[in-house]
Image: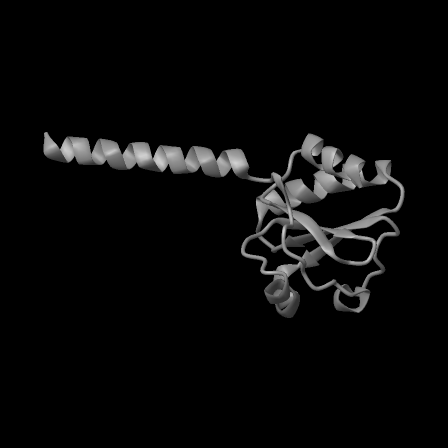
Length: 135
């Protein structure tokens, strides 16, 4: 009886953690603390005139492909916004500088390359649109 209760408690805890993780995946989180600016030389691309969505991906990441498709669909609807996909494995120094812990992570940069927020996980189209409308 005791082992059944223990197993049930572990399963319940795992379900709660999974639910919360899925619920928060891809949500935009505004940056509270100033970060160093990302230079166009660090990413080998020019930044957008209004903002840049810097997506960190890895080769075998299915959510990364979904994120790319979402951003490629949404970004052209906004002038001055640019989407740049970065292979995390090839840019380890930038990954460390920006404290990227998982892929996909989309870092929202202002026109000066300063991080204004990020979405960890695959964001929904509506979430990206809501953030870009505020820029």
